[in-house]
Length: 414
Ligand SMILES: [Mg+2]
Image (cartoon, rainbow, N blue to C red):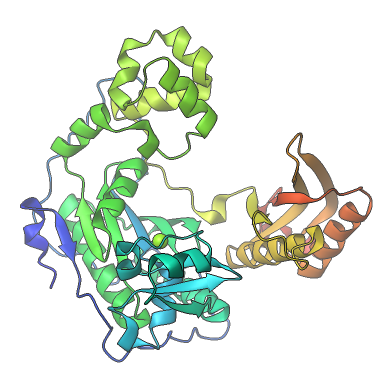
């Protein structure tokens, strides 16, 4: 079981693996209950554990975009989320290789399956060839959404700020005043999710969002990991750029050509050259990460002005993945997210990526008032598509723009 005081020795904490006792179902949300909760730690914080020693001083380039509380950042990520949800009602399969399938592709594989070479995105037939004893289960979509919602309810219940990354992943500011409290909150969160939802999550604790994300990667599966000051300093020199999220393949290739493979390599590149090769924004980001002044500021969804959802047809070629179908799914997802966050949008942008490559087609419309009305946005999106000769698509992106808090736009709702 978890022993918070052990983190200095190894900093890696695993929870109990295998089936969850009783496989509790998702706790029903009270009708009308809001997702946003007041800032409270729900008893997560204690005094156990010893805090790693981090310096708060920034001596190098830039100013860290810090969260107002100055507390360490938690990155929380469910392990093999779809597979874990599917296994809640099949405890006898937990220790065996299992994967959930969307159409003909592996959507998520549990860790025993991963150990046998099964990966997300593989064709199910290839996965079976790789691991003949693999059990395949269809994605339990409704249950996945329900558990995802319940997971975020828990996040909001124990954090002062939540920045979602996906349906099963978020950065959290738990309002902890020191590292020990943050670690304690991470352990409490893991226990709570395991007992209430019956799925494992991994928690990373770091001084910035990048460090927290790297930590959660190291924590997997079903663990908690803290990147302490010594390791952080080393990472800021030796971390391969492939481990820094947000660097595209083209930029990576350009950086590689000038000899930048790891963070520390930027030291040897003149400022102008780095900016020329990867653009000013990316160059600044790399310098900040190198200097330890990178982003630690959480941007809760409630403060966003744009929400985006993406749909892809790549590899599927199914008749129901028409542009209209993809748009419908994206719009529904966006309206749901906006409503939960208490936001209403005034505009919509559709970015269509043709299957043959080339320039994306961008379609936009702004309404006179703000709304989260699904039917309104569906009809606007359908109208935009109808006015365009839409080629076969590799995918599309839908953005709800001009978001405003609902309480500021009540009078304009329709
Ligand atoms: Mg995950």
